[in-house]
Length: 358
Image 1 (spheres, rainbow, N blue to C red):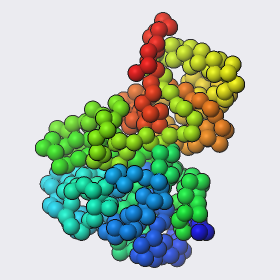
Image 2: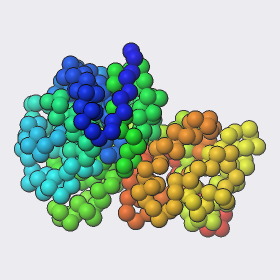
Image 3: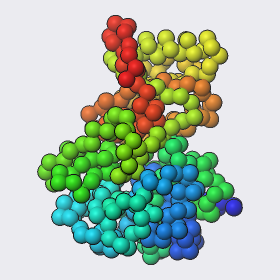
Image 4: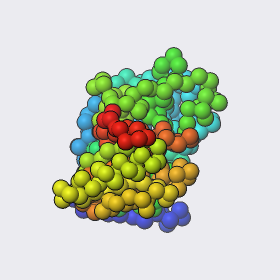
């Protein structure tokens, strides 16, 4: 299959390309398109055969739910068993935007889309191309990230082409995405809403709108093998090809430990990658030392993370060591993605030399 890539420029001329993509969606096919978070791989959410094609193209486990993307709030009623009051309040505050809500589904949504669950994950993207594609197709669009399953999510159309070129007919190229991390997922089927995946919309932001919200303890811990209720809960995600270890501790101890590990690996002939920040990058001795940006600029760190993980693949790194990022705003979301990419392989280092694997 030949994959056509159409560049989007936020103008009327784009409608011709979006119309072609909409026709593919209508016919049960797949289209990659930009959102404000990452690129999505879309299909008709209410067509079970189309949903199956998403899993096949990505190599994605079929029990990993897909997120349904809508263009209007009224679309929620078409797929919901009922629309919770808290969903209405959150939608008014954060839609369109990077927030996914889990609600009970009705029969309009096939189990192929929800991973066999009686709940559905839904969001309204804040990107003109995504919204236009939904509107022109006349379909609600199920869309996980447009990458091969387990790989770093795509923040550029080129990333989509690397993973899915030849497997899908159309990629709509909207340039680099604005946020770079997937949406926050909050489960509204619980008595107290539960965050299942952290993102740009934080717990504090949610609580200002709907009151108490809990966070799933598994967000920053290894999964327990349970069936996933939201995308990405169960499986290793966002991962480069090289083994990745997150090194946690104070700055000086982390630099010392990463350099120690780097020297050992290089002595074995391994190519070592290091993820640091503008403040620390020059202190490392790795073969590839890449900075996520200034530590206080969380937005830049989030936007660069997946791109940098892919750069290590391009540079053929054998092992990667990364600083941890417990920053105050979206630091939990950044760490969640790093831990998934590392398969929860974390090295805690004490201030004076001791260390332990967590």
